Image (cartoon, rainbow, N blue to C red; front, top):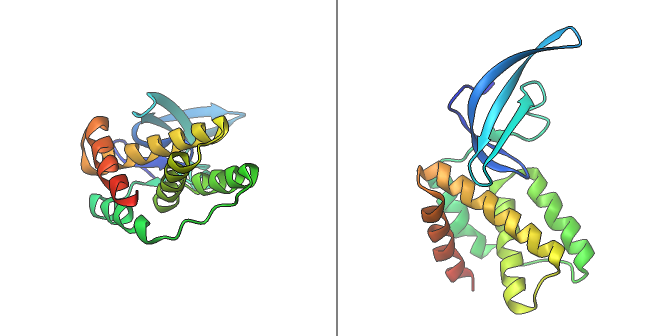
Length: 161
């Protein structure tokens, strides 16, 4: 169970902080809900604590792990289907895992593909989502602002290109 102030990642939404725990009585059953603030995107989300694990909510990685994953993605071969629809489904399923390494890989692959050939509008949106998720986790793991986190990401993708 998470506590107020814990830094978490909610797949498809990104990194955030548990701001509050609320008790709600629904259908005669008292449940605890996490009230999460996702700074990148300025979202407030409420999720049942009982469902958090099934939704893939996890604690953020520490600074060392985040920087290691960013550095290691260059060693992962780029492998994406040529068909945009298959590529989209594959990338979306990776983002839904909530694993930082998979989201970074999706971001890297789509970033490079956009530079090389361009992306469909749907893939551009997926690229943007992946970028925001990555920036959010960098930001919270290092306790820095979004702009500084984006600068770190830029320095990494210079190595990828």
